[in-house]
Length: 313
Image 1: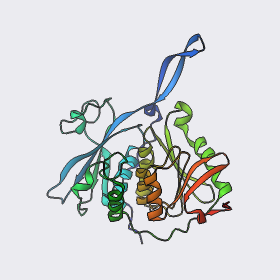
Image 2: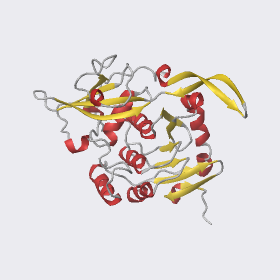
Image 3: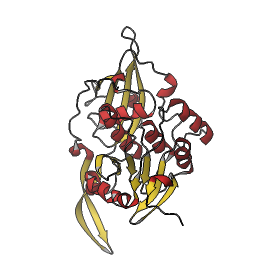
Image 4: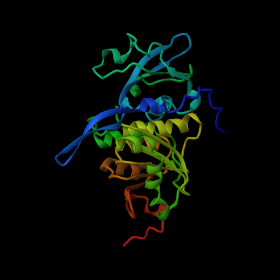
């Protein structure tokens, strides 16, 4: 039986007013020009600070600065910690809040104060307070120390690292009809409010096998969109997500398959292509992997037996 979920404050709405920016632009058509209005997605840094340790000896460490679209920042922080293996239960988190002093002035101990990243006054620093009983491995606090395809660690080492931190796996029993799969990219696009405004933002969604949309999140960073999505489910004590599929609006990288694995997702489908290491993760951990899901076709890279009516020729 799962433990009772913590009383983490519910974050305000997704702050659409901060997620987009209206601009005056010059639009060119052929040899003609005219002034027009355009809406772009906002990209701002978010620093995640972690407070941990026993009650008598707490430590505060900045563990990540990521460029993200404002909104669902608490979900993003929780999802990042869960998918990086820092926390495994929502009760590991006592409190999530915007850090004091994060409006207008950057705290002197903040990583943003030493960063060359652009900074706009606002809620750009999130502090996560872990429960005193949670033991944190300092080696796990460096962003993407084994998860990114550009980190310089070979694929074999990355897969071995995943095996040491991933939650226990059960047999993959998730099944879905191919005719339902074809409908999902359209349903994701319909649910992408920020994409409809800007045309320049990634989406990630969770669906049931019936095609019902469970949740959707958007962000300029594809990994942030997935962290926001999985973080919301983690805080609601709904992980592992064995009875759901994760749909990505772009490509499927190793990092995104790793996050799906940590969230217990059984099937990952992407509108774009998967990477070779993403395919290897799918095979090693028995995650059904679909790529190029568009119109009336898709590729199965692993788990064809989980796709109903998908005949091979």
